[in-house]
Every structure is written in C-alpha cells, then in structure tokens.
Length: 341
Image (cartoon, rainbow, N blue to C red; front, side, top):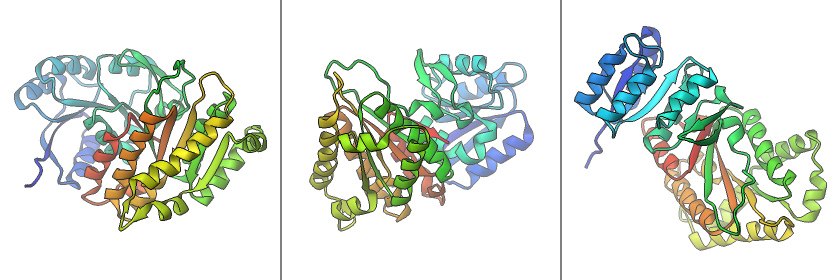
C-alpha cells in the first residue's frame, strides 16, 4: 500500500523564497503542498481548516507575525509539526520562537543545504537549529539547548551511575565542517577526563588527530592511557556485515568492547565515553539504507546499555533522489537530536 503524502502548508511572504521552497518540495513526491500563503492570519485559518502534517512558517509576516501565528496554530491544529524558516538570527527572536514548543528553526541562508534535514528532524519530533545559529544558546522547550555547532560536545552532567541516553546525528557539507564538530565533541570528552571512541575512515581519523593536536591537546597521553581509541569504520563493517545486513551480536560486542576498554581507562567519578561513528553514512553511500538504519537502531541499544554519548556523521551528499526523504526521516527517528553544519 502506498504511503500517504506528507501534507504541507507553506507560509512565506517573500515570493522568490516561497518559489524556492515550492520547487524543492516538488522534487520529492512524498510531499503534497496543500496551500501556499503569505499572511499570518490566513495561516491560522488554513491550519485550522486543513490540519496539515507540516507547516513551514516564516516569522516576518503581515497581519500576524509567525510566532503569534504559531501559538494560535498549536491551539487549532495541535498535531501539525511547525518548522520556522526565517532570516532572523536575533537570539531573542529565536528563543521566543522555540519557547512555544516548536522544535525547529531554520535560517533562510541555510535552507539550500539544510531544508530537507530540518524537515526530516521536525517530522520526527526532534529538535533542529540551523547551522548559522552555531554557538547560540537558547532555551529550547524550556530547557537549555545548544546550537548545532556546540551541542555535540558531551554534557558533563551528574549521572549518579545511571545511563543517560544521548544519540545524535550531524549532517555536514564538507570534511572541514565535520572535523571541526568532531574535534570539539571528542576534545570536550578528553578534556573532562573521559574517554572517546572514534569509528571513522582513515582520512577522518587522521584529520581529527591533526585537529586535536592543533588545539593543544596531549593526544599522545590520551592514547597511552587508553582513553582515546580510533578504529577503521570500513574494517569494522567488513566484519559485522553478512549478506548485506549487520550481525547484531557481532556489532554490539565489537563496539561494546571498545567502549568498555575506554571506560576502564577513565578515572573520573562517573566515567563516560564519547562515541563517534560513520558506519551508517558509509552504508548509505553504498545504497544499503536498510543496514544504515539497522546500525542506528543498534546504536540506540548501545546508548541504553553504556554511559556513552553517541554522535553519528552524515554527508549531505547522501540526500539525493526521491527515496532520500523517507530514509532521512527514518534516520532522524533513531536520534535524540539532529544538527546540520
């Protein structure tokens, strides 16, 4: 049975940008734009009448601004997911927009690269902040939430021996962006005295090592202590994939042993490990999306079993073709938060 299309309401008063959004959605038959509007009051009425699955909502609208419109929409169409798409980078505006319970804020300048990622995250109920807001701290849904550029650093929070699940994904345009994010993610863990496990390609492992050294970190000491472990993602997949799918026992035991090894070297009161993996990205590149999603589901098992903060890296180049949006939604569904660089 064919899936029902995702019914979208587009609310944008700048016609050229609205045309860009419409043309982007038209490339993916999963989306059905049920109406396009340019007025805040009209958006409230249309949402109440049509009950769309998704609303792409500008903030600077005539009659009623997007934030005020979103408040009313949440009353009249509570099941509709809302993604703010705005040119405003003011921290006060962003925080006010997110304070009403809307999960996503996409800056228009980032829409060319990040629109589909943002949509995929919001449809799955995940938080999304545009990469242009990197470094901005806002109160997202009444709790502290870092912007994409900063939020992938492990939080040094008291856990009292309990497992706190954190499994996030970052979508990046080029290797420089990935390595910048990854060096902060791993560096924060090591600087706090915790462990780090990196499952990546040779190029990314080498690049990360150079980046950590350039930041002044004594990575040689972390290696000697056993707190930093880096393994080849391609080799790990070759061992764990049989007949196109991961063997769960082999995967969980293999990664689990690496986590336990790093934990055993940590001397903090409540040790944690930062785990980066790009196995799912490699599987998606190979066209094996079923195994990529399976990898993420197994990652959730790891996050529920060990005191580990997981970050998965994905190239934005994967998001091509008519099936990409469905894969993206499934991947977003397996993560506690989704970021884009």
